[in-house]
Image 1 (tube, one colour):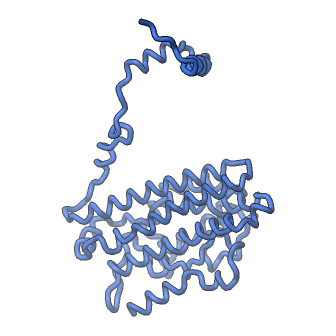
Image 2 (image 1 turned 180 degrees about the horizontal axis):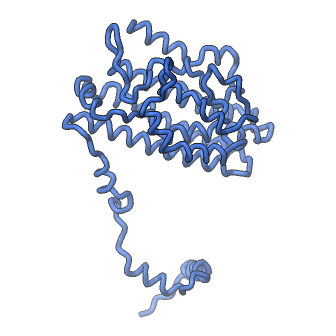
Image 3 (image 1 turned 90 degrees about the vertical axis):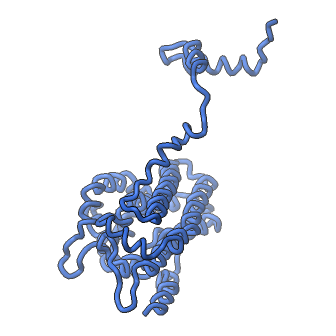
Length: 321
């Protein structure tokens, strides 16, 4: 007994025929492929077996698996942040709702990361950490290129210049010249000799072309610029301003402060400090009050800039010194 095809199915078939018309195959060929295709499973869709095989500790200490897994989770969230930033950079509509909603997504990703950082601060045995970390030299979280890409998408490159040199560079300066003086490079450079650590040398060799290419692509088109391109009603929208300020604080204050907490937990000793695996001077590199990096300096008052992250850092130093 033949069952009549419902009108909506007929319409979908017509749409499929139109879709595949120029592919060199008719719709029937695609339907044959669909007929023989296997049912999709959850584990195949997310490549679960592959995902769970990517945690390969270098030592026998159990807590190293926590360390490597959490860092991989972090990089996946960074990937989501970059996914949203790319949408904002590519958007030409100047739609305030779209702009704000993507910023809210980004802020949620960073909130998850910041709220979960106790996994690193409190969730590992200190003695285990101090032993297995020696097998990771000279690798360092400093070498997270995705975090640097987030910065490049967010703000003009001259906003990321080391605080002592920032006034020397403007939007008219050469991107290549500015890049040589970004703040994070000073965190892995010997202040007495000017010699770069192996960690920094490896990172620059691997990723400098990629970072410069992205910087050139988003020159005058970063999130900072996208905000300034919004209509006046959007630029003055309290929700937009709050979303941008939250993004700034999450990345340039709160995220760094979580790392400060971990550094004090594992690397501080009475009277001395243990060096970071990458040779970075974490006491000078991590505190936001020292770096004073802001993606959107135009959205902060002089007093807010002056006190950028200072309260928490001073509290920590007073506790341990």
